[in-house]
Image (cartoon, rainbow, N blue to C red; front, side):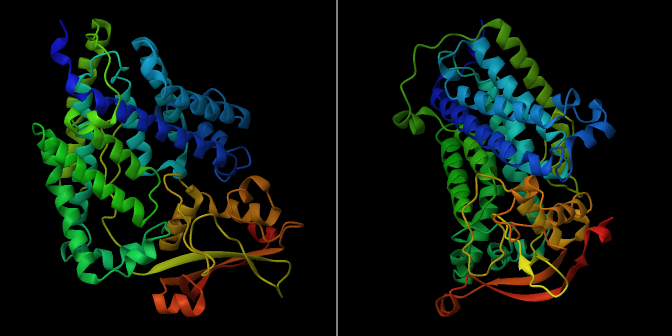
Length: 470
């Protein structure tokens, strides 16, 4: 009866998409476990307990409205890790177990994002939630791949790419005159090991890169809805572009998730040779097909909001129109900073110094240090420090508490950093300066051993003691 909903030629696509999404969930829950105590725990920078006390459940649906102790946060994180690992084996499970497991993953991560405050305000959080919700309706390997779920994944990919392309063309003029990459590799939030090499590529090549990006984001996404092999070729082009972005910078799991979505548009002619042979496929049962059609109809209705946003003159980036993070709008780098500034935080035992610098895990600090490869892992504090250099308002909710934690040598917060220059006793004062950073040329790098040249621009935070913070 429900055979018309099946897309057997996309068995390999479903196989790859589901396994990649399970991996991304695992990365997301691992990030939470490693960072929640310093960011969201009872002694964190913005405790979840304080958030749920002032924000009702209807505005932030989350399991943490039941309990918000550190032990409960840890239990939710570990439950997500276990469920993510089990999702790699869910192909072997009955359909009902598949639905239950992927629903659990979505509920757990939704609970984190809805109370994660500024630390979970990035577009890839909503992207993972929306893709993870659709994965509930993909089904295990012995069930025929459901065409509506695959189409919705392609529609999600379309919004990611086309929304990002539109916001660039409507935003900074450097995207239109093809000069954006003259700056972006140096000024992006989290440069990677190869970013300096990319930055010093010939400028005409940068302009070709920008033009190729416009084609990939504004033209290619429409081909995702064409018959094979056109859709498959379009998906491959998107994958190649995302791999290029992964080499040139650290964007958490944004690129990996986009790649996972692109596989939804690839038929067996592309993926069949590199994936297992499909077993005999069962028809979709009615108890599964009816909710699948209902969800498809729901997404048709919800499409109004992202379409209106993309076509409207006041397009916004990375906006969720509902608390379930379904049918969101996406986009990135509508504006490009031309100059890189970094907030450098230091402490001292007294006003005469010496002033010692706090090094972060990923963001630029020591000019001798090569930018590390971080993605698809996400260093949330490091990313917020980049925003802080753009405007102090980004630190309004957490910066005073961060400085207090440094002055108290609080372990949970210091664990978010690369090292603590005051291991024995806390500093008496902390301060922060604003520094201009630029990549060294190959000749400068060889002469100085430094990847960056930095110069002090201004004082950002004057020297403060605990009494000053009080």
